[in-house]
Length: 85
Image (tube, rainbow, N blue to C red; front, side):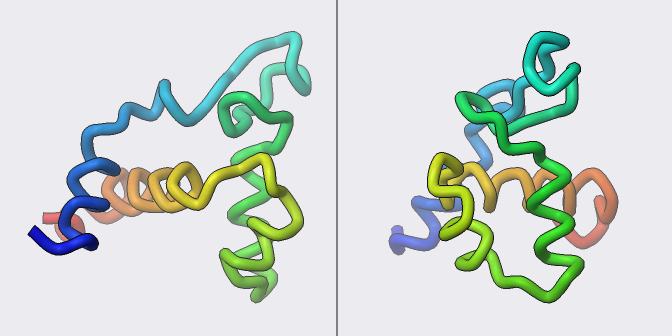
């Protein structure tokens, strides 16, 4: 199994509860990357404004590459189920 295949397996084994926290005491309940105060929405805003994933990760070092990639992959599967199949 290639390194990429192992990474995909690891990502698909993760649960969104392992990645996202929604707590009224943290930013008023805005969904954030677990263990941080970085809103999930911020990742999408960066990408929408032509920043790269690398730039987002540089600005928010408390977010792991794995967490950001998994959130993007989960979003893709939720929005484009046929593309993920």
